[in-house]
Length: 292
Image 1 (cartoon, rainbow, N blue to C red):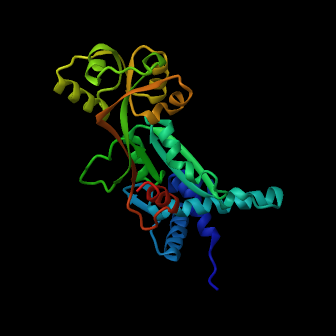
Image 2 (cartoon, rainbow, N blue to C red):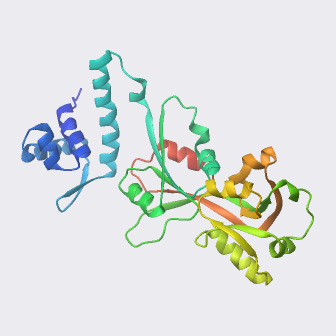
């Protein structure tokens, strides 16, 4: 039976967390050359490079990120053993790191991960941010999947894959006084105050094209990019919101808001963005397959 050298793994673990050979050498109180030798031995044992070396900087490779996940679990278990003589269940949990646009509907985010939340072996983290920042984290293997309402931009040096996982209809949504309103869509767009997404959203682009085609100049009372704030303003009753019903499904359910008219020409498309991986994340595969 072959043995695994955990001393090599600890050297790698310290380098990965300090971000440099210099910091690791200081923490371990050994020379940088000694650490380099240990890393090369570990890479030889695993048969894969653990870092992408760009000049003087070290960036975890895909295999390096996987190795770090396991090293974190291994050394966490060792610390627990020393402290309590019992292995912690969290050491065996599968990490899933998801990123989502800060402006993306929380209801949609929850719906995407809901099917795996009952797993006893899951360790989930969800972060929000800008698309550029999230894609950078994805490229550095610090995220496993990014949720967005627009595909990753095409670039010559990118390998992102945008999986189309859902398309939600868009409606006019308003306060209860609009319940049973039978006016035509064109009349509502022309006569009622409008709460709209910001101009850089796909929904807004479609809405602007629609009203231009109809020759309508709507009265815009608010423009909001954050969906949580969008929900609050919609609930205030200042006008009709142009929004996918999933964003306000709780308000629709309890009657705080009502769906007045669906807008047939508009829909919002959602994407799960990943990187091609030699070792695909099983839970990400499961979540995307469940949406196909």
